[in-house]
Image (cartoon, rainbow, N blue to C red; front, top):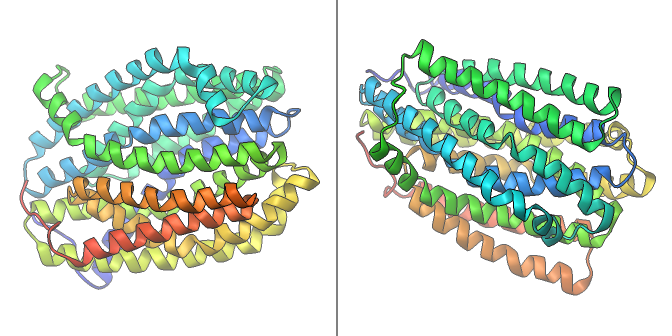
Length: 436
């Protein structure tokens, strides 16, 4: 199958063809959480804080399973680049079966541990009770969430970023309607928010299954050897994700211990960061597809040129997003109906969120390129060392009694360390392995 990626304007069109629809699909999950945040923010305290605590646990769980999307995208794209479409679909089916099994295992393990997990983050009393309620209901939707990840990875690997966009838009619209009806209409409180999201995610998973086994006529029978292979290939990405989620969980735990107002401001800032981060990750998703397909087809020079161009896109997009956030900054607290004390903390944090966007743009793109190249082992080690670089900065916040701004400066140190680690790898050639 010939590659269509070329330098210049054709090169940019190829990036945009994958990145623009990927943006819409990527922001669906943070928009789920952002919609939940806006609606739950209308409930009495500590509902918003409980949402932040429970969502942190869920983000860790799902983040550890991101290999179902990223690993599948890279593997399928390589097979497509090498002209092996049938094998590409087979690997996609293996990913779906793995996703279903992992999702059911997460429910069995995490359900009884829910009270302990929210306590570990620092929640007590009514805050903990509401967090456990949201977490346990949301666990029922985890298998669907993971099926969506795997299905998305398959289609992106096949260079189809439009279908995941359409599914995500539909799921987001349904989520917003159900949350508003259950929380504000029926008065189910924070439980209504969880049920609305679970139902929306389940419908999205059903659509992906129909696409894979209907449109693409994928074989339904599981291939145990293929499932084991997919799981083994994802171990390094799990380590990478574990280190990433550990950093974010530590930040939330520290913010929780600062006080109720601080965790609410941190929750809102983290939601905005996630939304903007996934917007930047759209280019990284294009990087996974383009890199995997180019290397599968044996084109090293094309991979190099694509990487340079996508990093430029990532940094430029980060600058634009940062400027837009600064322009919207005065209006953000009102959107979340924030109390005056929370609003003051949030306005300070938004400066840092905006300033860090260009750095994040480069980090997300380089991460995606190396995932697409199958360089998972290096990514695991790099994420481990950069997480260790974050710990002294976080410890300094605790020792000095620093506030949220100091905590987010520590996150900036971690992000810069990731940029150095990924940039140095991309300049070398060890990751440029060709073939299916």
